[in-house]
Length: 328
Image (cartoon, rainbow, N blue to C red; front, side):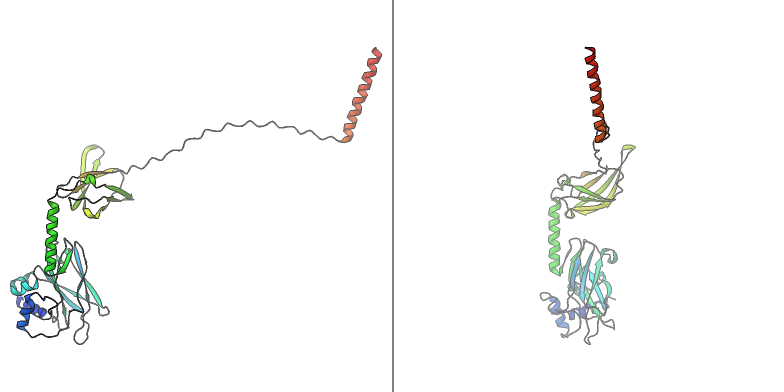
């Protein structure tokens, strides 16, 4: 099995060319063994690229290759391990550390993507990995390999060969400097929260001293104030400045925010007491207004009736006048 892998790697190196490792002794080593030939596969015009890298996976994108007869190559082997190809060629025992993942491309596309991740491929986020992509023809024969990639998931670093190693080393030194500093004081992080149904979002301002924050829900039993249950909610990076979790919100509680590197933790209160609605002042009843007395309608009289009344008054006045004269 080891001889087969060494043979495959030798063919891989044969097709790399000086664009793969001009400063490396790999090119000199292979030139001493073989005459230079032209093979189908990866080269300057069709390179594998890193599409995305996260803390749990790295995704590559590759062109779909064609062989010397312009036939589509659909089968590819992704070889990855903890050692660069140069070291493997010098020490065949290192081939045991190589893992292979088979990927395929659709014939009707020009590019395809593939990923290596923590769960499926058993990657260690702390480790540095080297990756090669190997096209396979219909006879399952390997041809020109892609460039040698290097990546580290913890620091989200990917590059070619030694450049990647240098970047990871620098990131570790920076992390060590941070961890040697005093931890963050979460009292200074301006923690706030919002509530949307059962979704609680904690936000804060990133501060120096700690890289990560751990969150615990403190549920107090109403029957005994000393009985406090501590439930771990999760973990977040300081620079995320946000942590989302679910809670029924039926009663007020608190969240313990614990920074790493010996920082000062904070118990943050989540208040779910509904706001008291302001009652509008009761208006005094207005006094009832007395009804205005109705003015009786005087019946209209006609002109003849008025003349009759005047005549009667005149007669009565004349009779009264006569009576008074007689008495004198």
